[in-house]
Amino acid sequence: MNRLRQKYTETVAPALQQQFGYTNVHQIPAVSKVVINAGVGRATADAKHLETAVASLRKISGQTPIQTVAKHSIAAFKLREGNKIGSSVTLRGERMYEFLDRLVAVALPRIRDFRGISPEAFDPQGNFSLGIKEQGIFPEIPYEEATNTHGLQINIITTAKTKAEGRKLLELMGFPFKRSTS
Image (cartoon, rainbow, N blue to C red; front, side, top):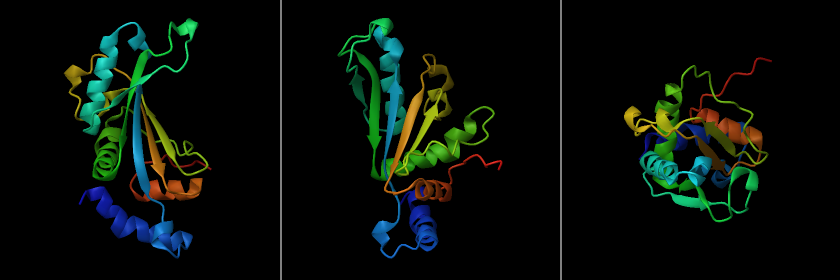
């Protein structure tokens, strides 16, 4: 069993059940999936950027990503409907817990001048979104290979019903949120 999944079952779930007064174990919030997106607008001019994004997502996630296409044409960006402009991968189960463990324990601390992630990025249903400026913070991407840098959008989808439940779930799982100054 993965280290983060074991932490969830042994400490996080009982703490959430006690704090929020759940009567049924199925009411306890959990992480259901993680979606990682890499939008590469430069791919319209050079397809090599998209290949780099697909390769880095494959290394980071351990799965083959799908390529996303533009839904609408935008003349100002020289973008046409159907152009390949990014890649996406959805993680569930063990791979999801392994990725979250690497994200929290290894990748986020490698960000220069890291002071914590913003606790404001929760939607009303308790899902969390995190933007990363470059893929080189992950140990799977060697520094020499990170020539065409691109950002990542990581969406953590939970079964929480409110922002408070979602935040408490991720706090207990070890996510380094910034402390509020008020």
